[in-house]
Image (tube, rainbow, N blue to C red; front, side, top):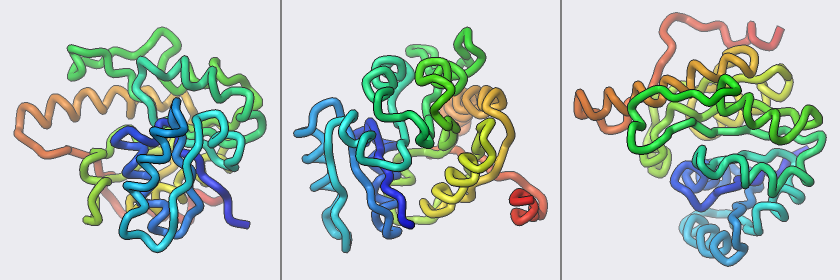
Length: 223
C-alpha cells in the first residue's frame, strides 16, 4: 500500500527539493510548515509543472496525516519542531535530516552533547518513534533541479526495516541510499557536512557530495 510522506519544514531548501522529487516519482506528499498558509504557498509553487499535486498543512497536521515523517529543519529549530509534532509520531517512521551546524563556524565540526543530532532527536521524540537519519550530505540546490545528483545517502538507525524505508526513499529521489549502521553512527555523516562545506569553499566546489567506491552488492543489505 502506498504510504503518505509528510515533509516537516518542507518550505526550506532541502525539504522542498525532496518533496518535489518524491511527488514527481508518484509519491503522495504533504508539505508541513509552522503556518498552513506558508505550506500552501510552497506546495502550489512546487506542484507547478508536475502531474500531481503536493498537499499542504501545518507541521502537526501533516505529521498526523502521514505514514512517514521527514524532518528537514535547521539544528536551531530541531527541538521546537519535534516537540510540536511529537503527539503525531508514535509508531511511525521519522527520518531526521538535521545537521548540527552552528553559525558562524559552520565549517567546523560541532556535535551536540548527545553525540549526534539524530540521537538528540530520539531523546526528544521517545522510543516509540522509529527514528532514522539521512540526507545529511546532499546539496539541496542540486536536488532542486531535474538533473542527476551523483551523491550517496548514508542512512542510520537502530531499526533495520525503518532504515530500508529511508534507503528506498533516497533511491526514489534519484540518489543512492545505503545502510550505514546504527543511529549513533549518524555522527559521522553529520560531522562530514561541515567538512564538505570547508571543501566547497577551499576548492570552489558547487555542492560537494560523497560517493562510496567499490562494487556494492546492495541486495546483501536485505539479508
